[in-house]
Amino acid sequence: MTNRRDFLRLASSASALTLLPESTFAAPQQSGRMRHSHPMIPAAAPMLELQQRFVDLRFGMFLHFNMATYQDREWGDPSSPATLFNPTNLDTDQWAAAAQSAQMTWGCLTTRHHDGFCLWPTKTRGANVGQSQPGLDIVRRYVDSFRKAGLRVGLYYSILSKRDDIRHFNVTPEKIQLIKDQLTELMTQYGEIDILITDGWDAPWSRITYQEVPFREIYDLVKSHQPNCLICDLNASQYPTGGLYYSDIKAFEQNAGQKVPAHSDLPALSCVTLTDGWFWKQADIHGRIKSTETVVNEWLVPLNQRHCNLILNAPPTREGRLAPNVIARLEEIGKAWKKPAAPEPLAEHIGITTPNLATGKPIHASSYPDGVGPDQANDGNFHSSWYAENQTSCWLEVDLKQPTRFNTLSLVEPVGAWDDYPQSRIRSYRFEAFTGSGWTPLLSGDAPVPATILRLPNVATASRVRLSIEASAAEPHISDLGIYDEPL
Image 1 (tube, rainbow, N blue to C red):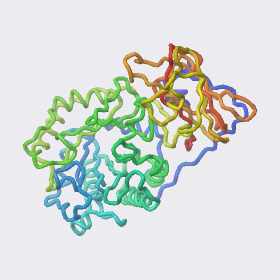
Image 2: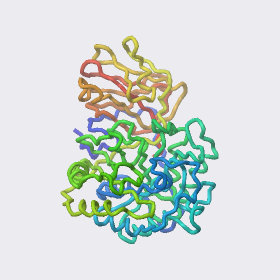
Image 3: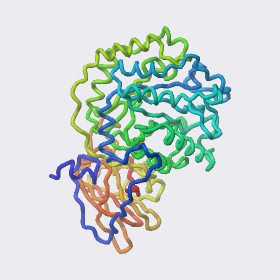
Image 4: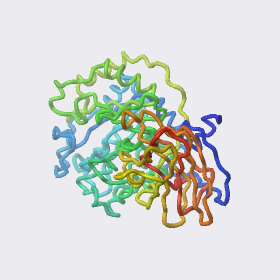
């Protein structure tokens, strides 16, 4: 069998993969490394190296500090005046020292949360700290303090902005440009950024899709300025846990019930809160703080063994300092954590950053039961699925309507969705493309993982794509059939 590391550049699964004859497909066009504008930013490193570097950081500090801090809310009121944000004793050096005491290695600050208030003096129209206090720049103070302490730097940015009316069905080119302009400021004015965590995007509660605010355009913009900046979208966690969809780092928000699978081998991040909520509340000074036992032995140690970096939220108070009970608990955590050995190095995984070309296209199947159609395999909903009743071999065929270029395929089974579907049922499968003169084999494989993402050896152009399940346990299900044209 092919060595896993040798073929993972072609398939992000543990399945054996056979590359079928090439036929008439064109060789892929290789795109060069993006140039970046900041002379102090290092040249691009391989993605696997960046992911391993991030996983090896192991433990970080999330800093939810924004307008909501001054309102005892989780989302700030977008109608609030900028002057309400008024840290009277801002001490970002204290934040960094507290992170060090917990043996944390990096931090991440909420530069803009869902209400849209910016923690840097943006030149865009956005409400910001420069309107709160002349000369105030929380982002600058934070990055300087953390770097001075030898800590790495991440930034959080919400795509959703209630102040700017950036919301589902209400996105305009001007609003997309505002997002791009603000991210450009963050990526060009504050030195090297290790990770950008985005939020409020393609979430059930924001509903702004990756097409409305185009994910790949934002991704390319960030990489053009910061080629080594990893991008982690918190809401991409709704996609299958076995694949890197719309993120360089897979996110799991434990507060929302998202658990890292026991045998996960994806580079991951899990975010949790030390206090009860994300932002500081006045009651938190006497409130419940998560125990050292919980943080170290229930979260940090087991998550690290799953290639997952834990980011623990420690929210600053209205003064701009961490409260004494938070400081004390972080110090206890640092003393208790003994840093056990890291897991095996990461393997390479293929990421998805572009829209699924199969979604919403006409689709046909060898068979399907009443009330269950093949459209449930390309409706964009991973919680629905098509299956062939009482069959052990079957096929799905997507009509792309016109010759379409693609280089990446995926198939997703609903493994774990029901008690009677604990593992993959598919034993062997084959992808083919219709090029006008007949069906041409693309690739085949066996024993797929729940989310199998496959890179073609050559770029294909075809009007129809067929997935044939050649052998399976009874009634294989497909939750999603993916066809993508990923920039290489």
